[in-house]
Image 1: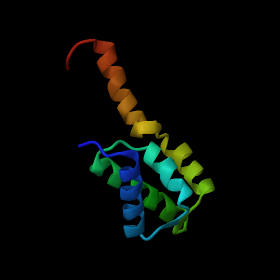
Image 2: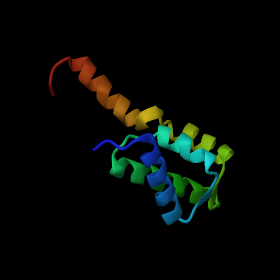
Image 3: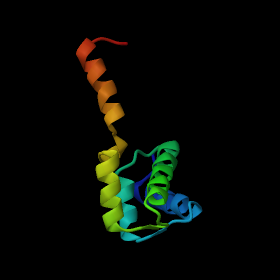
Length: 98
């Protein structure tokens, strides 16, 4: 099931509220762009954001902290991470089903 962009924003908002993080509503759009439409992936990203905030001794997500999180985690639009890229590189290298 594919979620619309608005649904993803709503899910992100709910998960961040459950994680007891305060955030700027403008960041919801940016976060929704960085995650796939799979509920588990949305939840995992929100947990990573929460953990990053806790590590930085804050319960408030702002634009500066969000940009720092992106730099730290290297997440591309759609939720692709360096681990996904490594997997695709291996598949490309062997050029056959694995």
